[in-house]
Amino acid sequence: MRVVKVQHEGKLVDAEALDFKTDSSEPWTEYALSDGTTIRLRTFMVTAFRLINERGPDGSPIYLFQHQTIQNVQVGSHLTQEA
Image 1 (tube, rainbow, N blue to C red):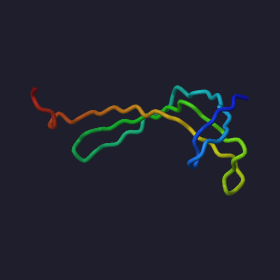
Image 2 (image 1 turned 180 degrees about the vertical axis):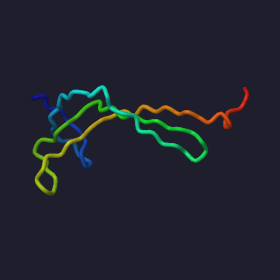
Image 3 (image 1 turned 60 degrees about the vertical axis):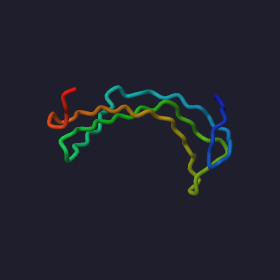
């Protein structure tokens, strides 16, 4: 078990750094905007932690995550201008 300090509710607390596997088939989420633009987003988890000695109101463990969001914007041709 690898214990680290993390911020939770304004204080530093102990947490276990958790290993995880990534499913390489994670899908993109697409949003079609009213101007014809398509926004594609995909989130990747970077780190995962389970807090030690901290519990939620129902007694379940509390998990914290760090993640990164990748974005792709496809602008409609009617919105582009010649440089």
